[in-house]
Image (cartoon, rainbow, N blue to C red; front, top):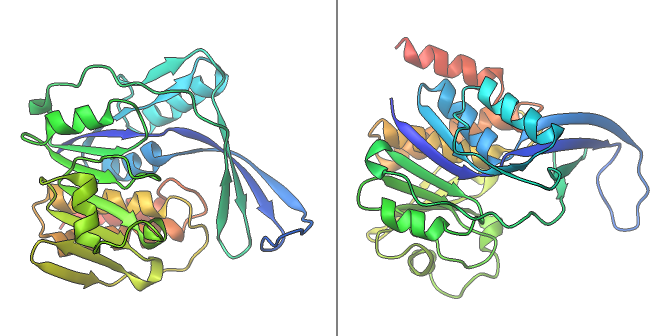
Length: 283
């Protein structure tokens, strides 16, 4: 299978389960759901490992017990953590406030500055996936474009994301630009862009390209926890592309992975996805 390098966060999620949906000025009871492995690095990487790919993660955690725990957990799941960086401060906890309808609100402190080292030899990598605000990500992407498939998530701001495939949610696009989706994506990703995917939950996803646009339906799912659904979707798309699938077929795979993700009470992929991928290997 493929060798895939992820630039994405590795988080320690602290789960607070509320007794009812959030409202302005409300008072709530909560159950403490404890800690769990999370972040785009884990949410994206674990499914790709289950699919048989060699996955390495570039991220940073603190030199503390939580940082040690995160590194150990990710490594146990099969993610190569040798390119991880450590900082001297304590690892930031992510507070995930969950409501009974499966929605979540994320509360986190400001992250320490994360500066990437020199880029690797891209001939060793089949794909690069970027879902991080790390300094130097643009340089890494530009050096990778000629040798390696580069896929990136749209940032929260309008920073550059040089890539072949750009992914965003419809919510991410609200109020961004008066340009058409394809024209806007070109301003972010540059002339190397081949496809711009915009997801919209149960309404499916649109893919924009220089010849038009297409819609790909979502997969039916029993929603338990939406955390990590976008990460799982991106992983499924990337898996499909590594199997040389056309973009719409890869998006169907992404939708399938996302459906498994929202039906799992965690942000990292659950047993249903693992069983599905195990079955695919025997086909």
